[in-house]
Image (cartoon, rainbow, N blue to C red; front, side, top):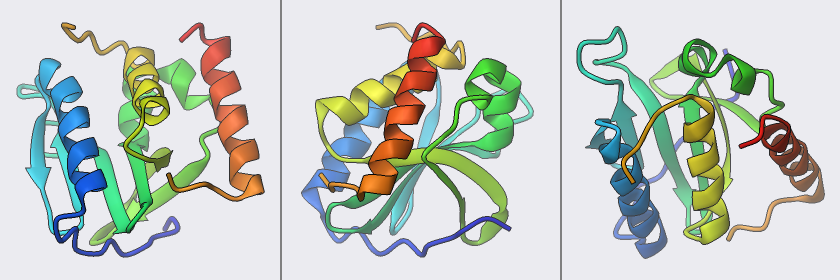
Amino acid sequence: MYPTRRTVPVDGDTEFLSLTDKINNLLSLGGFQRRQHEGSASWLGLAKTKWHKETVFKLCFYGEGDMAFGVRRDFVEQNGPKLAEVKWPLKFGVPPKTYVEFRGFQVRDDDSSMKRIDRVIQGMGILLDSGHHPSGDYQIREKQFDEGLNSLGL
């Protein structure tokens, strides 16, 4: 089992809703469909793949200014093996399926977070047509993650 945190109801949080729309605009270009939940948003795998009923991307809301974006670990390993080697800042499970590991990072509704999300999607070879201020330890992990993405040329 992986570290889990309970999401909380979004209750109209404008930052979460705006970020969800931006991520959806990006992922929908690749054919990923969004499912909205009380405290998160999920994107299912593509139709006609083994992932079509599984959450492969997740945006979690833990409270005002506290959000995380993640990608299902085994989805990353299948679609972006080099990306799987990068040291991700966060590894987490999401109730009720806490046995499913997501790799991810904290996000805000800003350009930096969207650029990082876009780089991850590129690293998995998905072709598209088109803050919370973390602790010092997390910032080090974020820097290592970005360096890993840079080493892949993303």
